Image (cartoon, rainbow, N blue to C red; front, top):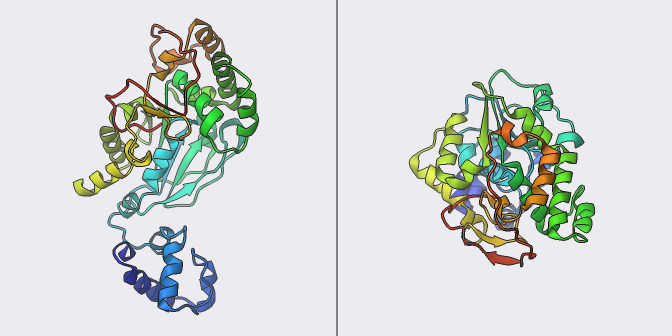
Amino acid sequence: MCYYESPNKIYCIFIAFNRNVKRNTLTQFPIGINKMNYSPTALLKRIRDSKKINDIPKRLGIGIVNHSPHENIFHCCVQKTASQWFLNIFNDDIFYQYTGLLTQLYFKVGLRQDSYEAIPLRSVATPLYIAYSDYLAMPKPKRYRAFFVTRDPRDLAISFYFSTKYSHDLIAYIPKMRKELEALNMKDGLKYAINALEEIGVFEAQRSWANVDDEQHKIFRYEDLANNNRTFLKQLLSYLDVEVSAEKFDVLYNRHSFKSHTKGRSQGEEDISSHYRRGISGEWKEYFDKDVMKHFKSVTGDLLEVLGYAEEPLVKYQSTQPTAKTKTNHHDLEHAIT
């Protein structure tokens, strides 16, 4: 923990670590130092420049204030439900200091495309794109907490369309889908996105979690995060039994606000080239017309009713393609994350 305060203290931590291990074990040190042949200045630079600098105190168990009563936390979700916001929270030094839990990152497509195995104890599995039946099959310790993040499936389709066509990294199925979307107008592109979400298993996963609610499992809604990020973060930490001081909470909240992750862009101000594109809920009303809605219902059936989302009147369909940066009229939600 001391390394957060001054470069000199980084060196002190490393030397203390070195005195307690054999030199040949340093080949496993997270920043890859395999010999103690660096001057203090060069060593400090190597540590500061390492992309894994934040792993050092966590690997050594340094700076833990409280230990979580849970041996594992399972962050379950589907795509386009602010999974990167949750990941950033769980990977934050403050969360680690008040839980002692490391993040176990799952870089998988998930849902129908993957299977999952046990995760290491004292860690947070995040994000798990997973249906409830597959989650149940995962080995679990005696003490754990799990939650699933759901979202209005109409907004999922909008977010998936923009992300796949403009901003998502070119991994897995994205290159093929992007090429196909580029050949379609927006209306047909939205239908394509709806079909893709069904094929991937997103709607099926949402349906599978709809009625899960007990002491160890909770359903969170993306809309609650979008409407009031501060309140949502408090509820999340409370559910996970994470007790942080008011000062630390404010730091955690401000560090992961929409503006913080978008270099000052206000929530509601759109940038289709950004992963944090817009940060609002109810966006489907601007893009769904009767034809798109009919197609959506033919694919999803009674999913809206099952998930508790109301059917609402349609507004005029926005037929023009968006520009790279477009300001919107949404201004009342300051800290949502797409």
